[in-house]
Length: 428
Image 1 (cartoon, rainbow, N blue to C red):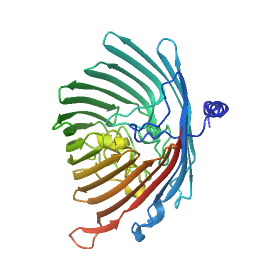
Image 2 (tube, rainbow, N blue to C red; image 1 turned 90 degrees about the vertical axis):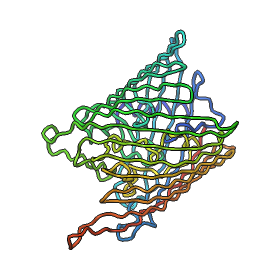
Image 3 (tube, one colour; image 1 turned 120 degrees about the horizontal axis):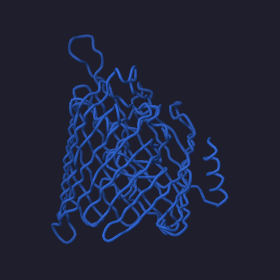
Image 4 (cartoon, rainbow, N blue to C red; image 1 turned 180 degrees about the vertical axis):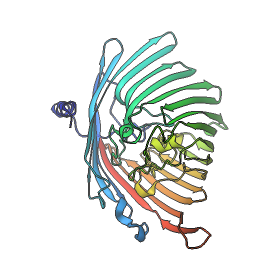
């Protein structure tokens, strides 16, 4: 543990900050009764999370993805003169009861940032640096770097430099701020983009550049229309092209394959992703829809880094109800194949929220010539008046995977990848 981490922990304990975990996995959630915009604000949560894969195929060592963890984040924000705002805190995970040692280590990191905001005329300039949370379509969790944005009523332009990031959700922190060091030769990620608002339309072009690995350019377009006083219809088109910069000469013997997070990225090459989604909603209470996704000749590595997909689910509209998600790329052997080469996916979802209770159902079918998955999940979240939150999710998941056969025809192995997840946490 670094001296800075130790001093941060001591500072937070002296301040009497209770343990916390602000669920970064769903940034739409707001804790009841806690204003994080005060001049000085202390807040957070403490909780317990568990995952079980006991119902999975026995011949695949069914329990190997089962574990429990205590999670905590504590945060202090303070306003300062000249538009400055500072944040200081820690996030920590303590795994226990794991069936196999791949959930391997305790995880504690400091979270410290400085944010400068200045408004002039109809524009607002924001610059922040350090370790902070930011959720864009293709990157999320806790970032280490700097971001600048220019905002108006009609548009936002932003640039982001990411030195590294940490996977900090309720689930175990498989990577602290050494994600790029271990898997991307310590390269930095550079992001630029815009959000343009027009009547009934939202256009968001973006570019992600990771030197010697890839350059991705794309656009997301959303059309939203009210069809009555309460009902609306939403159509989303999302496409991106990945130009691979990876060569074996540059990265000698660099397989970039990780048993824990299954970053399967060989062979690498140029690829693309296309998504179309149609949703219908009723106010802030109901949303349902269907979608289709297609990946090009090679794996779409931008998703495989640290995805914000629907099934890793950060900032799609329906997840505003803050129901625990099935998870995707950081789920052990339950990793989604949605971003593998030449994979077609059809999915559907139904979300409902009343007062303190929210329910979400998801279904998807993802197929290519080597691996197909069908997954069906049902989850809920309940928040009590005492700021205690309970969530649970069950996923029935079947996979058919090509295996080595004796004859000329390929043979397929059918696997049950089902699992369940649950948590309880207290927020203040």
